[in-house]
Image (cartoon, rainbow, N blue to C red; front, side):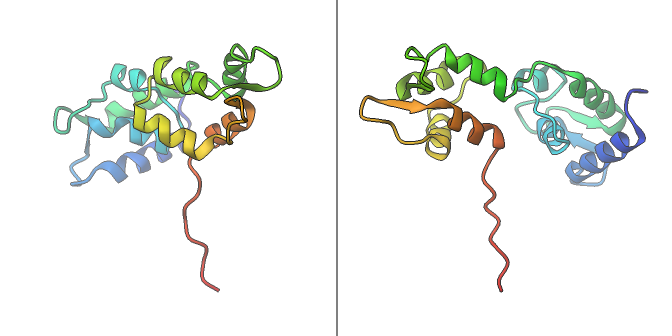
Length: 161
């Protein structure tokens, strides 16, 4: 655990404490991914499961001293891709090398590769991030990726004036 700074430990304990619903010093392992994401990490579901996260409530509890090594290890993980990595992958579908791919291929890719999305998740992402198709069914994939990696839109209402 020596690789965590005092600031990292303070942030980890704060995030852990938010999910300690009953003040017992433990957190349900179903929230492991949420806590890690609150700490600006982006673990895959497989990593969360490998680190002890559960899919059902009340299966397992984690203590803060058990969470810190998990945080430290996930912080070091390099499996998560970035915009450039994803862009290179989508270029494989760009037959004309014009920055466009078939909308249907993009949908198929989201549904079948990597950490697969459900139909509803795929539909929501495409609705939120994808520009309209052209008359041949092609879409520009770079703007889609930019919107996707930027995360969910801020839906906080503007302050009243």
